Every structure is written in structure tokens, then in C-alpha cells.
Image (cartoon, rainbow, N blue to C red; front, side, top):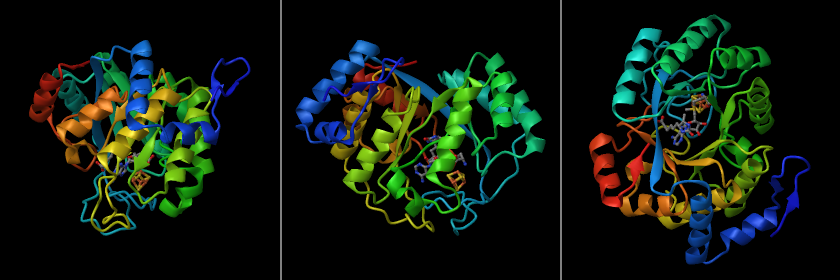
Amino acid sequence: MDGDLRAGAGARIWAREDIEALMALAFTELIFRAAEIHRQNFNPTEVQASRLMSIKTGGCPEDCGYCSQSAHFKTGLKASKMTAVGAVVAEAKRAKIEGASRFCMGAAWRSPNARDMAALCEMVGEVKALGLETCMTLGMLSDEQAAQLSEAGLEYYNHNIDTSPEYYNRMVSTRTFKDRIDTLERVRKSGMKVCCGGIVGMGEAAEDRVGFLLALANMAPPPESVPINALMPIEGTPLGDAEPIAAIEFARLIAVARILMPTSYVRLSAGRENMSDEAQALCFLAGANSIFIGDELLTTNNPGQDKDAALFERLGVRLV
Ligand code: SAM
Ligand code: DTB
Ligand code: SF4
């Protein structure tokens, strides 16, 4: 379990067997180890709060089998054009008042159009000027687009690998796992921080969950932010009837992510709407230390301010 030391970076190269061994630990032992690593690197009484906004919804040319926004499936979602800069900034102001420290802008694109880059850069500047951290998720980027966003001051770029390299083409056929990695490398090269994670509960096997974590943990360096989403099943998509992941399995995955990536923010992302307070508490105990706040993610529901205020009050945990 000691792994190799990656030359220069001081980070460890994880083997598949290391992750399998962690996954096989007794739950009580695993949570203890994860909690120990969590408190060595973070204040365990704080959870970072991000707010999402869909700045371009629906009509996406990609065929991701989990997504409400793909034009390939009849999900009943109405497509919209990109939101104007002023309306995005107004939403960011509200997010700040509601306690968000990061504002994440998402678009249903395969990649951004050249003609939208100026407005996107302006958005970054204005949201940042409010004192919020900025994140965008716009699909694949060219070197030039990554450089433009980075120069505009964008701090984080979200681009998920979503699942294991082996399972990827069962979920998406319009791009490859390698395409995802190429964009992630461009993001790194541009100087932006990487937000990269994925979805569980898509019918993947246990070995795919291992492969997914292995791919994330061996990025050099690992992503600064790791969103772990529980699938929000969308009627009309191929995964509309997927079996939900059990809360204990989900917490197990969070705990292993925490151990593999000790200094990354592990975000309990989509899926909180369908989780009990106790299931979420287990995830925070396992080392999750970031969430999305607000009553909407991109197109699906999230618990919202009142429920979250009650939950964090009960837990004595502070949103930061
Ligand atoms: N279009 C861009 C892309 O795919 O990279 C950015 C937006 S896309 C909606 C961002 C992420 O949302 C996906 O990578 C996926 O992890 C997550 N996502 C999409 N649909 C989801 C669902 N039904 N449940 C959980 N997560 C979902
Ligand atoms: C991420 O990993 N989860 C967020 C964010 N990155 C962009 C998106 C969740 C979307 C959930 C489904 C929806 O609301 O459409
Ligand atoms: Fe498009 Fe992103 Fe949805 Fe895939 S996940 S269909 S790329 S919006």
C-alpha cells in the first residue's frame, strides 16, 4: 500500500490494487482513515459552498446517456441561448448573498463557439469582481480558448472524466475518454485549476468505480476539486431507470477519494436532493468538504437554502 513516489512531484502513484484494498476495508476502518486524513488537511467543521448556474441550457450535440440537455434524447427540456452577461452577474450577486464562495457557470456545449469567447471572458471578470471564485464548464477547449479564459482570470475549469476509461464509451459515443484528458491537459497548461470528477449510479461495475478513482488520483497533480455526483435519473435518457447507488456505497467512494487525494476538495455534488440528512452526514464524515448550494443545479433540483440551513445547523458544520 505504500505505492511509488512520483519523481519530483512528491505525489504517489496509485495502483489498482491499492484502491481495491481500500474499497474492501471494513466500513468503520475506512471512514476512520478517511476522517483522519481529512482533518490533517482541512478543518473538518467547514464545508465549502459553490453555486451553479446554467448559462446555456439544452440542445447539446453530445449524447451523454445521463444528461437532460442532450439533443439526442426526448427529455422535455427547452433549449435556450446563452444568458447575457448582466443576468449572470445578477445571479452571482444573489449567490454571494446566499453564502456561496464559488460561482460555477455551465453550458450545454460540445465546446464553446469562438463568437462567445468575449462575453464569457467579460462574465469571468465581472463575477470575480464581486469577490467570488470563478469556475466554468463549457465542454472541450482548444489551447487558445483555455489561454483566453485563464487570462480573463478564470480560476477553475470543470471537465469531468465521469467514469472509468473502460466504461466511458458505454455512456458517451460522441467523444472519447482521451478527448476529456486532452482538454484537462490544456486547462492545466493554461494555469487554471482543475475541477474533475464524475457520476456514480450509471450501472457501472465495482471495477469501474475503482478505475474512475484510479484515473483521478494518478493525474499529476490530482484535480484541486473533485465533484462526485450521484446520478440524477432523467426520464427520456438511457439512464432514466438506473438503480440508485446505496448511501453506504456512496460514502465508501467518497472516503476512498479523500484518502487518494488528501488535499483536494471532494464535492458531494448532484444527488443530495435524493439523500437523507444521515446519508449526507456520512459523506461529510468520510471527507466530503464541498457542496453545491441553492435549489437548482443545472436543470435538476437541489435541497435549497432552508433545508441546508437546517442540516448544517444540526451538524454544527459551517458553510464557507
Ligand atoms: N457540457 C459540458 C460537459 O459535459 O463537460 C459541461 C456541462 S455538463 C452538464 C457537466 C457535468 O454534469 C457532466 O460532466 C456530468 O458529470 C454532470 N451531469 C450531467 N448530467 C447529470 C445527471 N443527470 N446526474 C448527475 N450529474 C450529471
Ligand atoms: C459537476 O460535476 N456537477 C455539476 C457541475 N459539475 C457542472 C453538474 C451537475 C448536474 C446535475 C444534473 C443537472 O442539473 O442537469
Ligand atoms: Fe452536453 Fe455536457 Fe450534457 Fe454531455 S453532459 S450532453 S456535453 S451538456
